[in-house]
Length: 600
Image (cartoon, rainbow, N blue to C red; front, side, top):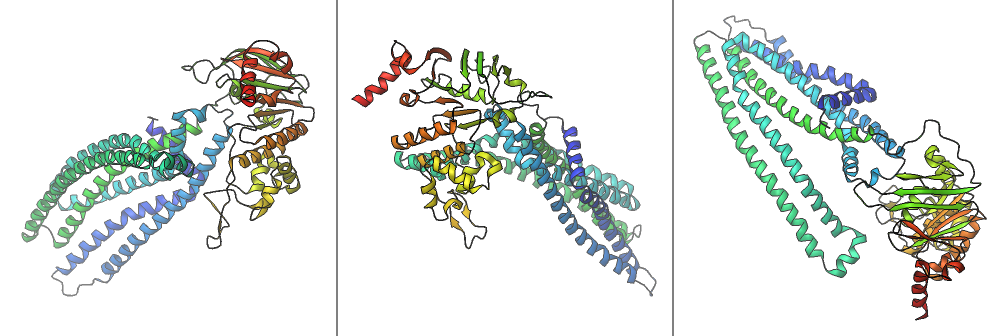
């Protein structure tokens, strides 16, 4: 996002809406904090002037007391401001996290999740959503404080010497310009290093990830990956080192310049004090003012540079939460009733992006209510894409999908999916207790242990889960520990690939009574005996309802009421098993190849 002023305004609004009290308190503390060093400088001047006064009865009680109070207030205000910023950051962070994932949860389809640009923005937004507004407020108030400090000390300098005030302000201009140039180069270096560090992280994750460990060790590629990781780190270090050298050289010159300005001012004021044209208190005031003005102006530049980076990162958050809906949802969707007639795909054309080839090319087929339909074909034929369209994770580019004659685009996707039970080929292994792993299949029954156990029995997992250390309450994780107290925590327990698949199948059994049962390679990791048991369970789950099965094991589709054969995104054959094997065609070819493997 390039509209930084608007981004800053949105950040302030978010901070105000979420944590108005701490925001107001920060403003008050900031203003008081700007006055504290000015008070110290003026009180120091008063003390020195009274010490050098000719009057023998010098009363320093109130100036000294004021110095003590101002010094204490400076420290206390700094600590209080730190606390207020942390408190505000926590409040904003929680609200931003809620808003971000509420937005993500409202996405209807899958397209955004498969978009690399959106994935990058989502990763940045996770951090920037909470940090952006809090840092924007902090930087804004820092700038306010620095302006007040600069203005206050500039006025104080004018009382000593107007000409000297001009010299001090002009002497900081080279430093301001150099800091802006450095900030620009830092941003360029960050953009250059970002992709390099992501590749370094990728190689590091491969070296430490348990899922990759088997192949890394079998293929002996650990040293290869480590060298790739170190190569990226060396490139990133070269960019950082070059930036650090530029910064060192520039800041060394700036230090000499600021020291020269301060030294010149000191020489002038010392001579003026010797000539009795200024007081000793003015000397102390000038020294404090020169240091404060130089520090405040440089602080402004650095804060502005940092603010630009923060706002650009916060722009990723806004790009996510303000993004248009990924799929259109009607304002008044039609009610999704029980499936009575069936589902029809009418001349459906679909591709995942405009620059990619068509995945489905004019597919037309009907899934009658109460029937068992199977989709078969080679990899890439479009079978899984049809499933995604039926669940309305995507919309067809041409044609329509009808639920009892109603276009699914006119239905509420939440209501539509509530009528579907599914086992996906790429199922999720949730690192949760076993009971919750099953129960989330019907979230309203998450605590219904009898129902969960019935689902586990249908998936032939009941005995496996019962035998675990904590039964159904056993944590299924290789990352987390069971128990909140780490002293008493126990590691989680992992399942085999086939057991995980049966657990995913148990989740589908939690959704009994749905209108459509979708099975996408549900037995890919199961042995023949388990596959037979699961198929019988699916028949009971379907209970005369409608089902759609995708499988490369053609033996599992023989009993389907209708088999649809796909090739290149088109329907090339339809019929029952007996009809299809009786004629030459793709189905006969695929079935014969599999049967020959068993016969041989």
